[in-house]
Picture 1 (cartoon, rainbow, N blue to C red):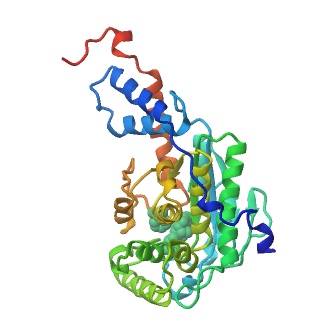
Picture 2: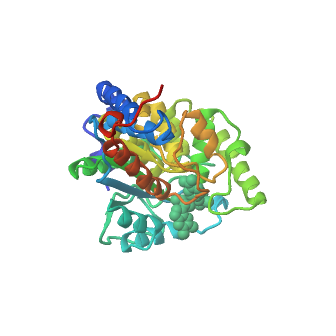
Picture 3: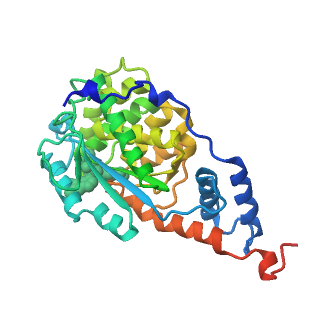
Length: 357
Ligand SMILES: Cc1cc2ncn([C@H]3O[C@H](COP(=O)(O)O)[C@@H](O)[C@H]3O)c2cc1C
Ligand SMILES: O=C(O)c1cccnc1
């Protein structure tokens, strides 16, 4: 594939302004929440979510009937350092599983009536052209971050663009919410390395079990991340850190979040890896922040610190640690109920219920 031919017409598109949430819709939604037949604030985070969605969807009655899920798959050179409990071949095998409907995110998408878009950005055990998978292969694998950058500059640009292209498809399908998922053996290592660089934290503070490492495995993973950070200590800005320490799917998620924010499409962020991509996206373009809702706090050790750094208050905490967009998909029914309550509850006036004294 000719990477330069895929670069966006404007290579600086990620810096363009993001859309502004609608202040009037936000104010109307806030006022409505206080007129509904309940003590003000009693629906907690559901009220806040409905108000945010009203501002983001620019409507008095937000709705999440049309949900779009793009899952980006990519392999990681750092898998060679023995940082995952599973073999690298799993990434390509799971691409096939996403397409044939047997993966967790396949089941969740079906249950939600959501569109599932599967994007193969480069897998060592490549399933080739199969129905239901878009191939945007940048290379079979990213570079081993211990010894080289994860991506070349053209690969980074193409990965960001792959994310933006998925948002274009979501918009064409009139999606009301965008979810990005990822699949890539060893990508908790890449996500941890990137987050450590962006937040100036030590690997031991963020490194976790991923697919199921034991304590010794986690210590080894932290040491591998130390080597990666030392190798790329001269990567000083967010773009260079994403290029050197990230991965194709992490960059695609960052590109998708930026493009969604520019196009006024709300995003529901999944777990640890997706949050690392969200952190990178907000560093590349701070306007992205307004458009991101956070679905859950993953079991992965570093996730709480990432969420704190983003000032994020996730809806759920179910000890999930899967990725694929699964935690975000699981949070959709809660958000749908938040919208239904906002639209369907009677006001004190309508129901003839006495208000607070
Ligand atoms: C069968 C299987 C399905 C998955 N779906 C998501 N992941 C998750 O696990 C991987 C990250 O963990 P680590 O960094 O420890 O390799 C990613 O692919 C992530 O999406 C999976 C992992 C496996 C094994
Ligand atoms: O929180 C996640 O996204 C996660 C955690 C472990 C493994 N894969 C994904």
